[in-house]
Image 1: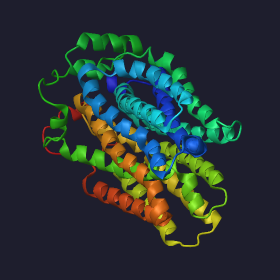
Image 2 (image 1 turned 180 degrees about the horizontal axis):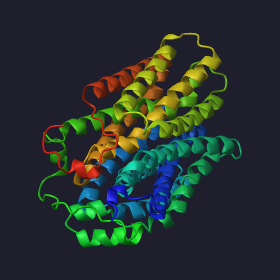
Image 3 (image 1 turned 90 degrees about the horizontal axis):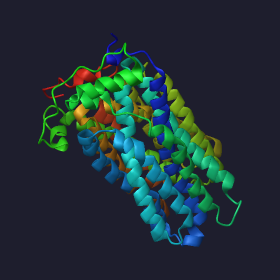
Image 4 (image 1 turned 120 degrees about the vertical axis):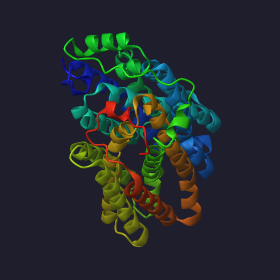
Length: 438
């Protein structure tokens, strides 16, 4: 019999990878489309800088609540119920965006959409991690980063193509975000529950059936672990001596990574225009293509570098490029675009670790909760920064906002240098045995 964690790659692994990739692509598209669509909706919806910030950050705020609440629910009740149906609701809400008439209506929808995105951020990483064999984990989970960047970049390209086609082209931009959600839904509905979650909750027979049907009779189900302890809150366990350092690293590295990623990415055209680039939208297209290229590059190196080296190095390079942009007062257009492209590609490459490193930090019965808490922490920072960025640019200048990004990235590098554990090649079952401080 083949050990569950050492299984060869089977057709089922490919199917669940596509189901997760499709969902994450939808997540990236849904978040990416809002930035440019707001630029075209601003006159019709009477959007001032405060409303622009609120609408730009609303999905991230909703994402905070969705991730925070989904983690403990998925650890207690299973991954599949949320994984199977959240795309249906996300598609329906995305369609409703095309029929709003006020900024307040759009704000409510963006909050709800963000909540559903938060559920998918948790269950897509968790369920895929618990099915993929150990030696394939880095590359398959890293593909989610490409999917997210592809969705984000595709949203920008689609919006750019639709711009000017109609007086209310922004409505079609927002409506387009429903398409990938509905396309991936049928595949999501066929996915079973995680065998690791089943055995952790004393359902070994059910886990064996899932493994036999999905992977074949020659693959052994996961080793049956002791049932999950009852009556102990997941968040309390995450901050226990055994897991608190990993929890803090997960929250800190993700937060420091996404604050500049979203704050600059959402309003990159406006930022480039504020730095006197004549065609800010073209610069934004190049920026988003660099995000996609960086994600592909990150997938290539994610299993060739140690997790710690990848984390610390990416924070350092991204901070360096932002520092140059902050201090170079008369940067020429070519250098401006080049430095933003380097920043985008490096940070996007490191975003592979969001999908690979976070699940490797936690055991099965805390994995969704740990990921959810890290996502919630990161979205608090990204929502606040996305809200503040257009206001800071308007009141204090674009270089002040860039300097703040330098500080956040430098802080991420220092935290990872001090506390981040190495997890490359870890067997998920080993994490269940951790009993002391880590």
